[in-house]
Amino acid sequence: MEKNLQSEGASLYLECEKSWVFLVLMGVAGFYGAFTYSIRGGIFCNAQTANFVLCAMALGNGEWSHALYYLIPMSAYFLGAVISESLGSQIKRFHLIRWDTLLVFLEMLAVICLGLLPESAPYQISQVAINFICSMQYNTFRQAQSIPMATTFCTNHLRQTGIAFCKILRHRGERQYVHRLLSHLGMLGVFVAGGIIATILCRYFLGKAIFILLLPLAFVFGNLLYADLKKEKGRLAAIPRGH
Image 1 (cartoon, rainbow, N blue to C red):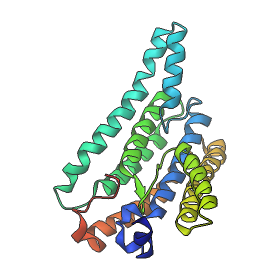
Image 2 (cartoon, helix red, strand yellow; image 1 turned 120 degrees about the horizontal axis):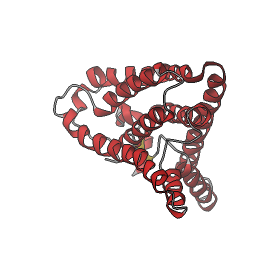
Image 3 (tube, rainbow, N blue to C red; image 1 turned 90 degrees about the vertical axis):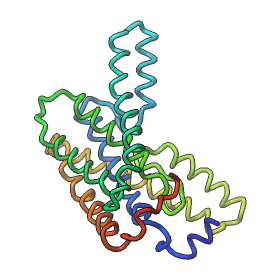
Image 4 (tube, one colour; image 1 turned 120 degrees about the vertical axis):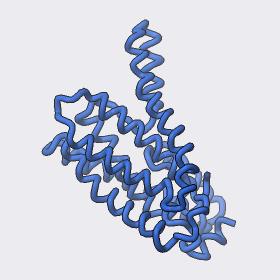
C-alpha cells in the first residue's frame, strides 16, 4: 500500500505531511538542542529521557529538592502533548486553518520571546519553553508521506536507518526500503546541520542567535497557510496520517 501511495505522487499528501516540512523542523530541533546545551544550562530539551535519568540519580543520592525540579520540564512536555492533542480537533471546527499551521506560528512567537530574553534570565525559562514546543511539535508532526517520523530527536531515525539497511540487503535493494533509508538519513543530517549552525551563531550572538530560526519557520508557516487557505481549502477535514 505504501509503495502504491508513493508511486501516485506527493499530491496525495497534505502539505503538513510533506517530507520537506519534516526536514526543516528537524533542522530547527537540532538548533534547539545545541542552543540549550551550549548557552542555556548544558542540557538537551528536545526529549525527556535524560531528565528521567537525572531525576532517578537525584532520588538515588537523596537529593529530594533536586529531583523535584525535574518535574518541571517533565510537566511541560506532558502539557505540550495534552494541549496539542486537544487543540487539534478544536481548531479544525473553525474550518480556517489546521492545527499544524497554527503550531508553527506559535513556535515563531516562542522563538521571538526566547530571543528577547536577557542573558541574565534564568536558564529554566528557555529550557521549559523548548520542552513545551518540542512536545507539541513531536505530537503534531508524525508521518512524512506515510513514513513515521520524529521531528525533535534522533534515536528513532538511527534505529529506522538500521532496519531499512537490513531490509535492503534482505530484499536486494528494493526501492521502498532505499527510500526509507535515505529519508531517515536525511533527517539525521539536517539535525546535525541545525546543531552546527546553532553552535557557531551562539558563539557570536548568544541568545539572539535563535532569531535565525524565524527564517525556516516562516517559510514552513507561509506554505502551510497557503495550503490551508487556497490549495487544500477543501481538505481541511482530512486527518494527517498517523493521527
